[in-house]
Every structure is written in C-alpha cells, then in structure tokens.
Length: 296
Image (tube, rainbow, N blue to C red; front, side, top):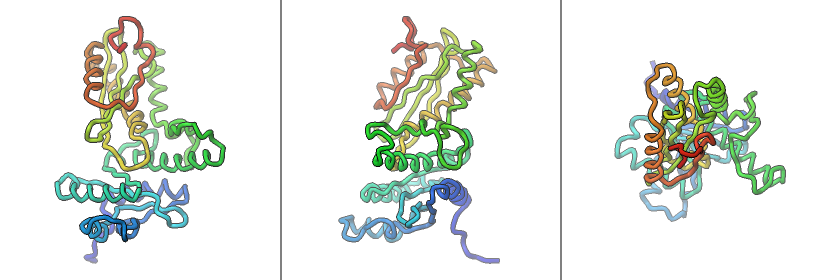
C-alpha cells in the first residue's frame, strides 16, 4: 500500500468537482495547490520580506484560469483549522497579498457545498455570477448593453448549462410559493421584506420578515462574511434569507408556533438599523398602510 499523501482532502475534492462542473462550461481550467509566487507578481513589488517568503512557501487551494492559462481567481476552502489564531494570521497575509495585486479570492466553507438552492450550491452560484459579470462587462463594452445599466445577476435570463430561466435567482420558486400562500389567505403579505446591512468587521447581515396575520408575523436573520471577490454578498444574502424565511414560515403555519407581534418585529428592525450600515432594504407595500407598526 502506498504511503503517499493525497493531494486533496475530502472537502477539497468536493470543491474541485463543483468548480470543474461550473468552469469547464466557460472554457476555464482549475489547478490545485498553486504557489502564490507562481500567480502573484511579487518580484520588485515592495512587499515585506516576510510577505515575500510567505508567497514563496504558501499555496492557493485552487486557481481558476482562462483558456490561455491566465489566472482569473482563487478559491480557498476554510476548514476547522482556520479557526485557530496561527491559521487566521496566515489567512490575513494571503488576503492582503491578493488585495495588493488585485487578484480575486473566494473563501468558502462546507456551507457553500452542502445545500442546493434551486439545484445550485452556493459555491456554484458565486462562480456562475462571476462569469456572468464578465459577460455583462463585455456586452457593455460592445454596446449590446447600455453602459449605465446595473449588473443584477438575478435578472440574467439564461446561462450555459441551465435550462431554467433566471437561474441565478435562486429564490424564484420560493417566492412563487409565498405568493400562493398569500392568494390562499394563509398569510397577509405577498412577498417578504428584508434589510441587509454591514457590520464594522465587514460581515454582511440580513433580516427578513413577513406578516402572517394583521397583528403577527415572523422574522429571521442570517449573515455572511465579507469576501475579496467581485460578487455582491448583498445579492447572495437576498437569496439565502428568503429560503430561511420560507422554511420558518412553513414550520410556523404547520405548528402554530413562532409568531410574534408586529411591534416586536418593528423593534428588531430599528435595532438592526442602529447597529449596521444599511446596504439594501425592501418593504412590501402591504406593510406600509397607515397605523401598521412595520411602516417605519
């Protein structure tokens, strides 16, 4: 039996498979365990001796390149060891070097792999949005898309490899189900409301809420760490928090447990606005009637 070590552990192997499935459709390749010094132009760059040594000795878990083998971005899988102080310091140096050389770095954990949203895990969504953003920029440069149009991944009608329309709008089926609950008079609001903010440490946070009766509703919250990757965490949270809200909504409707008064929801919203820098907010029109505690 060979005593040689495997190049990838189980989580890294899963990451590689997901990356391959997405990237090959776009003519991109994936390389594993590539030294930072083989990607980043560190020679004569002015970085410190310690950073230079780090770049020579450290690697990216995965590097994605185009068909000319030009690096596009890197992906790091942060397992349990990334919670200790020594590894966190190494991660900070790697993040700093990537920012200096303007090289996108996506950091993921098992949450980006283990759950599918409309058939797409979170890692695949981030990478698909990255490629869609590249197409969008080229379309603007060629005049196919107006230069003042804002890129919204949820509005992409088609992308390679998916037969669904608007495949990057992960919450589309969930939003349809929420509308049907409203039409059947099981809840008051037709669409959920949400607020997304950013904390001082760069973490993105979101709350989503919906009225079930005229007096009560439900509220959920979630968060996502900041990324050195040109895909909006606000867009990602917008999708994820909708799933979380729907799961709690169904549980509440089936059990009758979990409803809180609208005044309490309003209090949560006010506290959220005080603590975090606002990045996006949407309030359903049915929650803006006179005397409604959610009319903030």
